[in-house]
Image 1 (cartoon, rainbow, N blue to C red):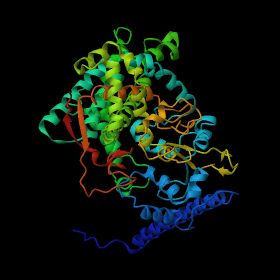
Image 2: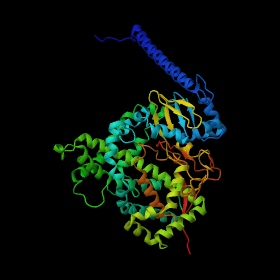
Image 3: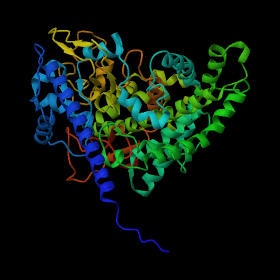
Image 4: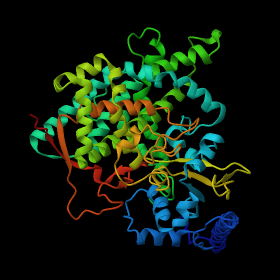
Length: 549
């Protein structure tokens, strides 16, 4: 006989509602408890003698004060967050003198100390290197398992750094320059095509494809032709970068498919990358010619890490670790260089007198015949070390537009101490944000901090006020955790400039009414699918072939 089922039992419905209410109350209590912890932690720190504090609300923390600064100084909505400490320092002169400021925007982010005095930054990166912040490890967890040189700590980091150091040595990188020249020639051909067509190019798109090709040659020894077609493992990697976030982003945090997307993209990257890795592991001793970063890493692992009795049997855990390292190298190795090249073009072509000096140096080193430059560099890569003004241009570009700062966590009992005033800044449990964007525009250490002056880097007289101050230049960070790829990036940048600036003229083509911030329309933004600072709108530029003679 058919049984008719009625509405759910009222008792069961009531039980479910009670359970839901308990969960909501418990969540609210947890939230309030954490809010009180953070607010009291910040207030205790700010109440230390001599510490300048922003107006602080027990409910909203520093959000009202920071919002007022952003409105007053007309910070665009899409401006990169690393600009905020610089704006606070401009709005509050006391902060600039202090060299750091507490920032409490919880729950949007962890309570932090934004640091932009060079000696204060040295205290937690060089003198007493603090651990990477857990947030960084948590966010890069789905990307690399936090098993890479950017996120790991302690013995694991030291062992991995030792394995990869040989591949990033200046001597080895110079041996790879002929391969890099081939990729820059492809880039130059694209610039010629754009000039002939009279089109506006997204410069960051072009430089990104170029630097992907270069980092692939450096790490894998393979031509992936990113400048000509999509590369599957690069596409999956960049798609995954778009899923990362370091502050609260509800669209990502509440996306139920985010873990699944990470899984799918990780698998896709691994499937594409593993044949490259396995080929090197199986043939590293047979490979002739210049050695790639991966080749030397495997050699170093076998000769220095593995026991003699186990040589020839590379464990699968090492292969997985290598894939994670390669992913981070590909991401960090192309991104920083791509944006720096674009900004270098922007700065040089906005300052014709600096561009003329750069071109004169290239004429002196490579000769006036532009058609011979690529061949001469490939035959003698050490010529790139004879370009002091070019290196100065690279450094000045990185000073004005660093891509990102370092993030550490203060260990128990750790404090920062101002070298001049002696003021103590309790740092235990705080996120220590080494804000390179602010320290490198701090007028206490940089005369005309917003001006593009490559000559800063050619000053030899220590009494000259233009000479850079110790510890104040930090695009690669300093101390034991400095960027392993800085020499690679520096060589790339010098090479790209050497093969292009004498052949082309360029001009940024932002709309006349485009928003201006920090004195430029090409201000740094954080694109939706990226975590580092990029030029606004990818830096649209018009390229033309230079007329000489």
